[in-house]
Image (cartoon, rainbow, N blue to C red):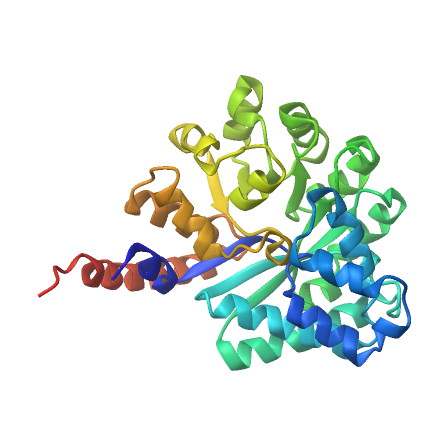
Amino acid sequence: MSIASYIQAIPKAELHIQFEGAMQKSSLLGIADRNDIASSIKHFKEWVKLLDQPEPKRIPDILKVTSTWFHHAEDLTRAVYDLGTWLAKQNVRYAEISVNPALYSELPSQIETFFAALNDGRDRAKRAWGIDIAWILAVPRDEPRRADDLARWVTTAVAKRAGVVALGLVGREDVQTVSQFERAFRGVEKKEFPRVARAGDVAGADGVLKAIQLLAPNRIADAWGVADSKDAIREIQEKGITLAISLARAQRHGWATNISDYPLRRLYDQHISLVIGTDMPGMYKNTLNDELLMLVDKLGFSMEEMENIALNGVRASFLSDEDKTVMLDKFNEEIKALRMEHLQPEA
């Protein structure tokens, strides 16, 4: 069994993935076809071409445009099912997916209706493939006025029944100052509800430190620049914050020209909680298997270290302690059996 085959075979949890940007081109074109988008918007063919090779600076525009192709609840349902199928084929058993309802301007604005459509697709994927999906409700940085309302809703019993496990902050950190979201996130923190923030994509370690100080996140996505900041490392260690990283995203945005340049080893050796994810696989053309393989092939991590990072997907999840224990035990049993098969000398 090759290393790639072994990584494909091990059970996995995906914590770093954004619904907008995760959908494959075939899913988006299916939605566009059902809603006759080609004849209703300008430059449709040009947008389709961008889906093949999206320029990093155009990704926010691509997400805004393709989200308007969703006109019916069934469009959301189908997209979730397709994404669940795609993840399950990588042997992902559990995923926490960030979703930004504000982008879907052609759909009804009621958040309960929105999540009902998402969960129809989630439930279908569960029945067909056995994958479990939870949601991180994303606050867009370019719409700070939504933050308080979303923060109030996210801690309700209705949100819990809808499978929402955290409040997130998405978008480029230079769009609005992080202080615009402090009240919303602090209110959620008081109710001991998990928080996730994207930071470091523009301001580096300074942006990460501001996010930590004002939002008190349990998890930070990107976190570029922290490896060179003693202050950021200390805050992350003391507060037990998990860093969620996509190596493909780092390369596409020019933070690390070569994957081998990414300072992941330094973070790992300082006992930072790390999870590896795809972030926007529809944009970056990556899979979770690709990301884990790069740990071994490009960054020199051992198989045991790669497995440890993969299992962080369970440890750092927002599952209950009981569910984490059950999942970790199951994953460890499967990995142990696969390791014995993988290390068995060929006859």
